[in-house]
Length: 527
Image (cartoon, rainbow, N blue to C red; front, side):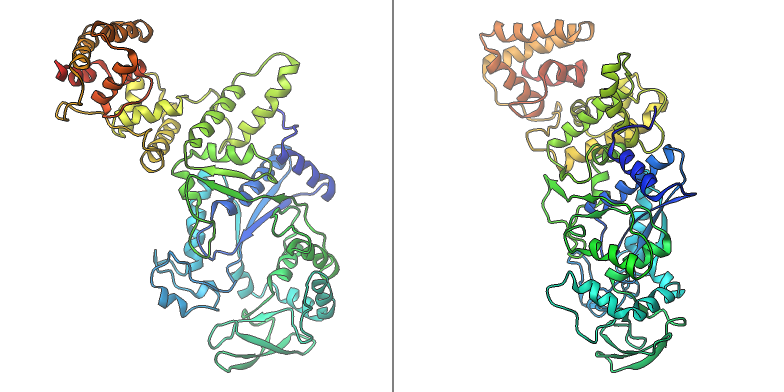
């Protein structure tokens, strides 16, 4: 399909091309400090950049997605969900790259958090080029950037003070130092020689030292200067930011002026994205506390394509919820409807405009290119019921469906895994059920109900395999009528006999899903 559309990713791509002019490659950026688990709110920025990069590429342009791990930041707080709290507290105020990983035995705490995300992003179709900022500072890549900030210290101070309620101290310096003796940032820059050397003292250990910016990796820029410096260094053309950064006087405002007036660069095209709520699962999103909903959590319940659909189908400046409650079923249903729309392109021009909007969302929702034929569709609620009937045996569910092509099985299996995870972990109690066996205790039913159940058992044995659902339904009502029961009295008895509850999935379809042999073995106990 043509990529000319009104989708926000295409509109942003067009804006980048228009404002930055024709370029050999457009650089699109994102990044985060790996201070803890990267939560799904952080992922919104990542997927937003990926969608814009994809839009640029589909328009025929080269686009590069760079993802910066701001791993040279300070370890300020031990997340509550981490073991060995006392040990980790001894590393406070040091770079997070020096903090040990007490969970997986990775080379350090930062790298452990990085690897967890890097491993998962390709699953949802995101494969950026990673930049590790501790390594870049270690290679002295930013020596000139730091010297420039020091040379223009008063101008930098003036720009930052424009957005501060309390001005910076007169002796403030636009760099910070990790003490080379104790590795903490509890240091004070005492002087700058106007060339490449700074002198500092450490409050923690008393160390005093003079360092050459060209020879040390212990000096770094603070965030509000580091960010625009790297815009210039990397030639960033596009980077979104959350509404906290985009607030008036926020870090984006100051970064725009600093990149222009200090580094002689131009700010990237941007947009503001909103926060994400979590529905059906408690906990405030916060990496530093460990109270997070992460991408792995969401992948437990949603197929990769459905995750992408939620973000591709929502404008970035719109708040929305990642749901773990019954809304999960509706989100899957909405995705399936979008998928059916994509594979049923209309002929009329009027209908085509509406189709193009949904088709573009679906196209961007795919991890790769859309498949030539529509994937196997099964209504998510029905799939959940089938999985419960088979006690989570995905192979048996797929086998019983009968009409699934081999090429369709991987996606269907992934959906079934997500559906089963949701049933086990998040589905409300009245949605969950377990089919009884012949060894299960009989339901407490009246004599009339027992007679009707036995009569229904005979009908199941003799007729269910040779009748369609609609035709067989008359046998259910006939059994109730024969024993003077209203359907409101008989249906709960059937559910009690099968699953020990008064309600369940639509009854006749449920009987067919369980299968005649199994239903008969249970109902015949009521003879």
